[in-house]
Image (cartoon, rainbow, N blue to C red; front, side, top):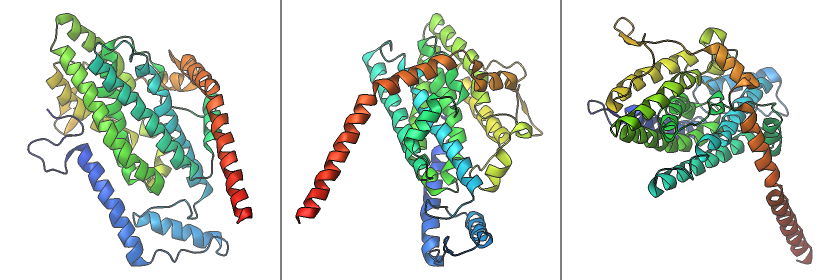
Length: 365
């Protein structure tokens, strides 16, 4: 069995999720070439054109599968939707460092510590890429961080569950990062250029995170009976929260229809969730572990697996702040932000001093 990021032996080299990332990267280059060939520079001037003309041009760019860039006119609702989505994604990367970071000092070997440390560092980098993408929409990073620590913006509900054992680090890699990849690969084709370009790199790195988790579980599941039991317990606890990562069912999703019309999203919550289930069933067989769903079975008519839906009432409770670790996660983030104030102050003072010296040199010249 091949991981989320690998094509099978009967598939071409562009199959699998990494193949989709490569195809999205090629599509970005093709869109840029089409821009040049079509003379896309002749966009209407936002200062002189009426809103209907600007909106028609915006719609035509979306319809042509090209990219909206920061200097382009865009509807306020499109901008606000992107800020909400990108900010939530960035916050999730930063908060998501906590559950696994707890295990860096307790990892079972130096090799495992080094790999986990590198992974947590990757998540920090992803947060920075995404905050930078959000800043292109006219909001500052300080505003985004303030909204997070004040509880005015959300992060992924999955990070409000505790990591109780070393096997949980594997389950997070296999299931949580696996679900994230399924969710995020289509974002490489997002209609907003900075977000799409950030996701190319994020998805390539996430594929290694998923592989790391799969390998941890594989070692445990083929180890002692106690190790296999620990791995199975982790899968049992993380399976349904991972399914809930895709959001509420399509019938209850407030944002999906408009986001798909704008090509921010390419697939609905339920489509992505189904794809994730179908992938995990085969991978669980290789691991020798059981997915905790007695109703999980192949439906020949649908050519997909039937499965039990996650508890969406629990999802809503966790989103509202009633999960096992909500308060701890935000309290930790507040402390870290406060502890880092001196670094931010020093960097700002240095930047101001450099700007002052540069201005003095200009005057002297």
